[in-house]
Image 1 (cartoon, rainbow, N blue to C red):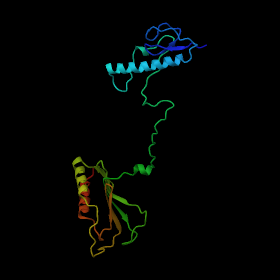
Image 2 (tube, rainbow, N blue to C red; image 1 turned 120 degrees about the vertical axis):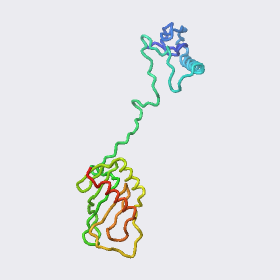
Image 3 (cartoon, one colour; image 1 turned 90 degrees about the vertical axis):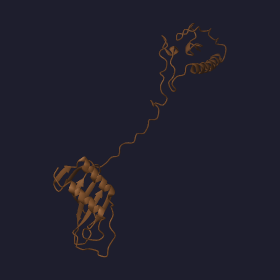
Image 4 (cartoon, helix red, strand yellow; image 1 turned 180 degrees about the horizontal axis):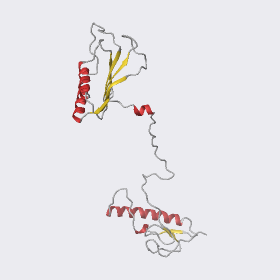
Length: 235
């Protein structure tokens, strides 16, 4: 038959009823409760719990500690034949049997999406199938000049890298550029265009047909001229 357990009044640990002194704190134990008293062990547990609450409150008032860190004293030391006490842990930590946080998986990108980097500046053109006729949907654009955000650029078989002052000048010019078309005039087209032009400044996009109205805002022409001047020499 399993030996009954009693609560030590010194450290409030459960010890065998045959012990005369607590193996954890060496406190003297009283005589074991007679087995004929129903509920004696239950009453002793309740009394011990009340005494534990009062003593912990008094100890916390006399010895304040850091919030959230449990107080560990000699009464928590392991005793021979009883094993170590349960390990205290932070209740906010997740362990076995507790729900684990759902970590979203990284978005899967196709190779074309990984290579699709919005340049700092891009000047490109699109051929027209006939004079003044719009290009077919999906017709590819060929880049004439591309400048990346890190200052690297390529244009018609040439490449290089802008210096920090040049990159600052280009960024300042882009911030001052009005990516829009000028007001339409009475004349529709001066020439018959054979291509469409496109300027990208960051995520802004402007397209027009050279020689036809409306023309780009003068600030757009200034941006193109500065970008071409900064990339005029081979890097």
